[in-house]
Image (tube, rainbow, N blue to C red; front, top):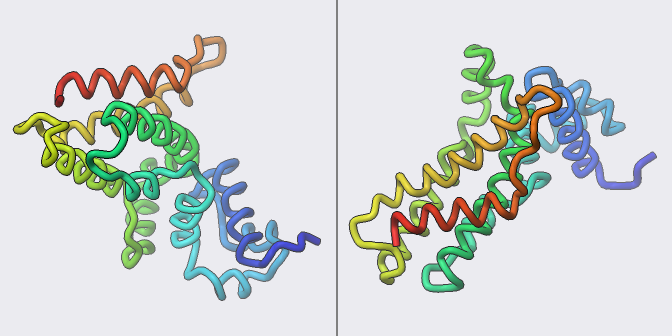
Length: 197
């Protein structure tokens, strides 16, 4: 038997199941079984599958929200910061896409999920808002051009990272692999910065 605390085992099991079979097909019963606990024990820690999904995003995937929280205008280079964000975002979306894709296939499931996370501060809009706030702060210290649309810039960078995950996860076998992640992130940051610096 795994000696990890029950909460850790539950989050680990949720991550593995959501990654392998998707959010829609993962049930709290399966998560509890994989974690070696009862479903009642799972509910001691989490209100349901939706809260577990948000926890998996925050605790088991490449850091994106935390990284965006730590950005400070005037520190490091803007290009370096954007490259780092692009790298982490691409990894984050690459792992999130297989988990959450089923939400968009079934409108009823998506509505139920949205209701389930109603009280939890989460959603795909948050990274865009955080990156927009960082870019506006950089505007304030003169490292991003005055008048540049920082919200559009944030949307372009994160949208490109999300699209990379979608585009290359749906390719049939035998297709060329995506450009190396570091090259993609650096090129994306450099191109975006050319338009706003």
